Length: 329
Image (cartoon, rainbow, N blue to C red):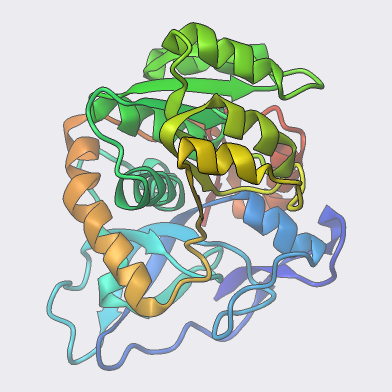
């Protein structure tokens, strides 16, 4: 099968398309999927740079954490899926390939209104946003949620899920144009952040009448910690998802204790198989119906052929993308 291969760490010149042995034949509860499209994520960039290795058990030289395709074959214990079923899901790595073999409970059925590209743009970003905001932070109707990097794949998914839950979504970005585009997906208000993340604090006061936001989904990292703590309401929740601005920051214990804040971190990629199965089940139950009805939808930035994977990486690194960068497999 053809795969995207990281032949050397560093620039995009280390990416090649190569022929390797097919994904394993499925046994027991495994399913082999003929991949039709795969999403690109910041994690793929970091893996190419040698800064984010795949978890044990996944290929270190084949990137890709989300895919869509049809079931090609199944193990003898599989009960959920049949050959030719349209499915999508997440893996710890190796999704940018013509085939992947995964446990049956790591898959969900694709709604009929989504094509391959749209379907492959869903799993990583919508599962990450849903798990962070609802499973871990317990967002409820009427709450105020601040989303950093609102124009990213996870950001646009989060905005839509917050709106669908009857809560209020606010967003930040370093690009004002991305925030303007995000309004159509349910952004109540936004703040373009320059060199000083503390600009967010005053904006939050204005949006919430001084009360602060209930939840912050931080896709940016360390540079925003001080502003995050000041922007949260009493009993607010901060969930840390990204580290593009760094992973180390000084924390003010006093404000955390005074406001009785909760600070959490999350990563889908490093979870156990059981935890990934749980996240997939909740995604299938609570998000897939919203996709099927059109209440939420994947946002596609640009589509590349598999052979043009280097250009796809360059598109993400340009920071000009809005929504998902995708690969046709």
